[in-house]
Image (cartoon, rainbow, N blue to C red; front, side):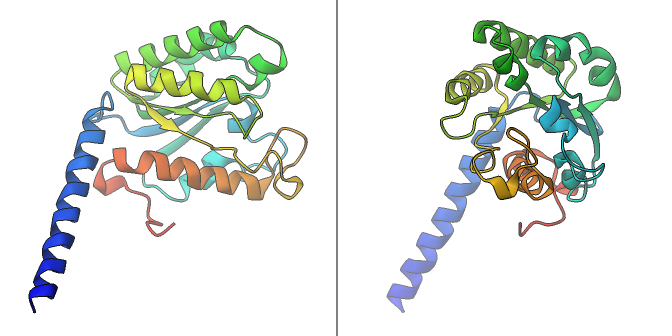
Length: 216
């Protein structure tokens, strides 16, 4: 009996500790109380869904899991500078609650300085947060591929109190069964990306907009 009481006490204590930790994590994200109505997936071809049919991109898969409106604001071949130029019309004017920022791959392919990419992403985050929305930064690295971008993007997320989505492409770009070409996921790969994004953003959404597939 005494052992059972101790186990119950430990379980209750751990549950309370988890709630405290979650609460602390939420307070560290800027604009956690955002009143926006949409989640905007803002990026390049990875967001757009290059290599798959319409509806097989990761924002479309994400839309099946949430009551919030999901907007795919990905454009094929965009660099971070291109994204910054269209942020007003494609993001800020659409009343976002959360913006998932995914840029850097084309900067890398075109040999643009990483400092320039980082500055553009910081500027995006600043403008989105000034609008009152949360920001999530999508980790574009995959294992050793663009591994130096991972630390830069993580540091920006910490600096700006944004959500960080780590390893979103891990194991996909090195697996031919999950790719449509050398650098883009296929439909199965995008489903994995969507669930990884979901797990990262879910704690920061209102309870009434949590993803319906809570067991995923």
